Image (cartoon, rainbow, N blue to C red):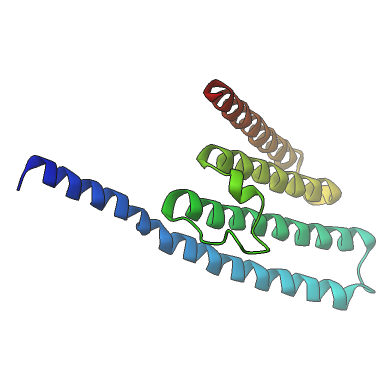
Length: 170
């Protein structure tokens, strides 16, 4: 066996190893099903308790639904974008519901979208804490704000780096 033949086989193995990620994406789909179950439970709770809860409790419940929705969007972006970017091409060009962003996604843009989603999720958690401020200590709120700003700065930095990379390639 020649060195060239060994190299070709090794490179084929390396390329095939991308499929190791497929069970991870399947696991995230299962996680989505679990989140859907929790979403439906929270929605059912809100519907059945709407006459007994305060407006503040209703707002917190709706923010929980929004939070779950944003986490689900994040999972969807990771599953679809990650699979299409790192594992295999999705043969859905003619599908009427094909997401527009999938045409423009690459690893860098996927990271920026994920960072933006994390900032949004963090903002929802922070808003829930401020609405329910009596349930949190000043130190807890301080750290939530610090964490949120850390996510925000990271997202802006990632977007800036991605912009610079794209600009340098043009």
